[in-house]
Image (cartoon, rainbow, N blue to C red; front, side):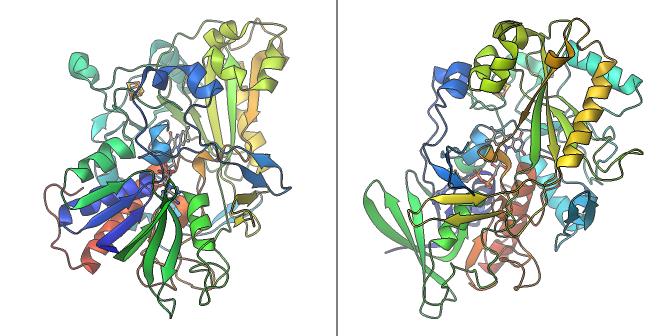
Length: 524
Ligand SMILES: Cc1cc2nc3c(=O)[nH]c(=O)nc-3n(C[C@H](O)[C@H](O)[C@H](O)COP(=O)(O)OP(=O)(O)OC[C@H]3O[C@@H](n4cnc5c(N)ncnc54)[C@H](O)[C@@H]3O)c2cc1C
Ligand code: SF4
């Protein structure tokens, strides 16, 4: 059996970042990824291929709480979900780390505070080339350093929107964004500022994803090995159940077992829970590290809604994801509970509506889909969903994932939409349209698991959490989890930067534990 110092399972935001962090230590690191490289091909940037043919979505079938099958919006590639992500790289707010009262209940405190995460957010922003402008977002947490890159500029229609919002007394801000764009020197810019970013892979590798900025730089170190198309299917332990002794993998039909001093699971919140639950043994009858019965529970993925507002004027914006609004994040004078974040999403294109039957039916009689896309201004509203024990990932007898999920905070979500509508009403968004068609809402169902988190939360108490504050399993000494599974709550901003920052934090801890010389210079 091949033996390593560290095995990392999954190469997305958590695993890819950790590999990058540990690579300069010189320790033998094996990165196992069930997917392959995402092919660089013209289809990367074809909306028809990406949104209608679902070219990059896994063929998995999962089941909801009523045993209804669905195809999850999940991507198995080197770099994980970040290959397709919108690269909005937000920090959680300070208060997101504290207990927060919501309309539907309590969002629990994290076992560490924002101050402990701050330096890692700064390092993650540097590693992932985050652009932004400090001081604009009224909920912005304390930051010890400026953004490493200047804010991505608004295009004229979005600048107008920002000015109008500001004129109405709000505080629109330049959204933090991870793209390798150099607006001052476009001939040398890796990012060409195209309209196929959010939800698409980046053909020119200019998006700050975990393949380009995590895995590839890690592989420059000879001590790091990547095995693609290699799925971890079970973790074996010693007789006492206190240590992982083998990672059983499947590569096509070939089974192979690897061993390491430290094993890190980072398969994404649902798949990490699946791996632990599928690794039950005599010492861990309910699943590995699951004496607390918490593995798989507290699944969250944001209570989100995509809103397409039709503007009287055409919206020729190319790269739209530059604006955010957090004025209602923690509530307002009229509604005392947190509502969440408003941001732009990638500019809609006609083929995208084709997978959206309700949208199509609503619009088809009036406008062509091309017309809709030309006039659309597209928003994404995220409200925090609360971690509930019964919102959980389980594994059926067929080995497939079940997600039992009941939404929470529906009222704050409605209130946030109401706020957006009332803001836009004054901005000439639908003067010549019937109000029924002025705003198209698309609530994100359980298959829209892009922001999945929870399932192996960290905490001080082994009775109520799976991982300790270092993201090490309470019950298994050499087992860590560094994807978004560790989140005790998700806040209302996008989760990837927090997973990246935490992977750097856990990386510091693992480096010390391995007795490696602290990496200098090259280490993020
Ligand atoms: C379309 C889209 C847009 C998004 N936009 C944003 C955004 O703008 N901002 C933001 O912050 N977040 C965004 N997200 C979410 C963000 O990408 C995720 O939060 C983040 O990637 C989660 O990191 P992770 O490490 O938990 O999991 P992932 O990044 O999903 O990585 C998990 C990895 O594990 C691999 N894997 C799974 N099971 C196994 C196994 N058994 N063996 C081996 N390998 C395995 C997977 O193939 C994958 O590579 C978006 C996601 C999507 C899909
Ligand atoms: S906008 Fe830039 S980073 Fe995004 S897909 Fe286009 S070239 Fe790549």
